[in-house]
Length: 285
Image 1 (cartoon, rainbow, N blue to C red):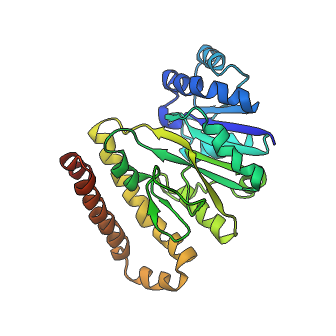
Image 2 (cartoon, rainbow, N blue to C red):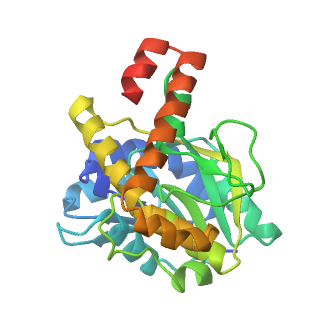
């Protein structure tokens, strides 16, 4: 089984220092798996690419995209440049554990077709922030924390930490038409559910995701993810509750507001129960 790894630099604006940190962590993992490495970028200078390839300690297939290309366009184009039987995706601003790639690809030997790794923020507020931004849902459609006891299969994944059998992704790719922030991976997960392709969950394939830089970016992310929730609701209903879709459409924005309200209530309870309470409540607010 050959393995390819795609790293996109869209969300780090091609910052060589941030990318170098990731590649230093990945280098021994790539060597152990004899993995192909593809890095998408929008103008990293040639001398910086040379230094970064030295850090990765292997040949790098650099794929330059137009400056206006989006996050999922980087993902799709990166996949198209690979040749591996299994293609793993990671974001440039993530910090993977030392055996991330081995844990993420191991289930394919047992017949898995799609494998989701676990994503978490760092620090005391991570459990609460994970509930807001990185909730995974087991087959009973219940959320659980990324670092809690997890089922073997889930209903969703996040594009920063996932691997696909080549034929599965080649037949689908991420949709790029919908005006979403990071909801396209959830749309693809719903399509996989409709097609009867389960998503295995590899709890050991953990990556720590960077926090937004400052209050302004945090607020922007909150608004964008809230917009994703409203736009994703019709897709979720079509897959899991088709009879309710017509009713929800007639109610306009009320169902989406109800979902957001329920998330606020549960997150508030988590902030009070887990602490630190004041910082947690500020994050929820």
